[in-house]
Image 1 (cartoon, rainbow, N blue to C red):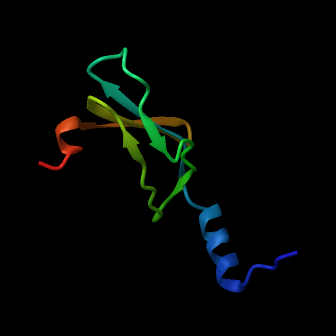
Image 2 (image 1 turned 60 degrees about the horizontal axis):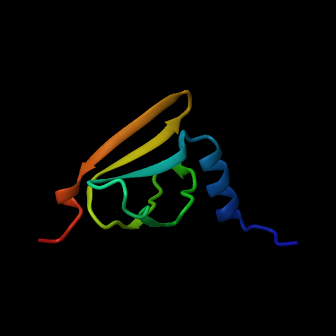
Length: 89
């Protein structure tokens, strides 16, 4: 059995009292729906706590918009990123 140290316990207790985003999903919107579904890593996004970061990589053939959806307590949140922000010029 692994016993967490005091700092790990403090971090866990701090997270337990924070609001979080759960059921996080990235929706890749492509110009042609007949194309193969985009590849995403991680495939399943973990819950996100205040002060934490999550990086999601996606390989999409012709993506014009990306939407981020998540549940925050009883409220659904959604944000969109235009495709031209996704690629280096």
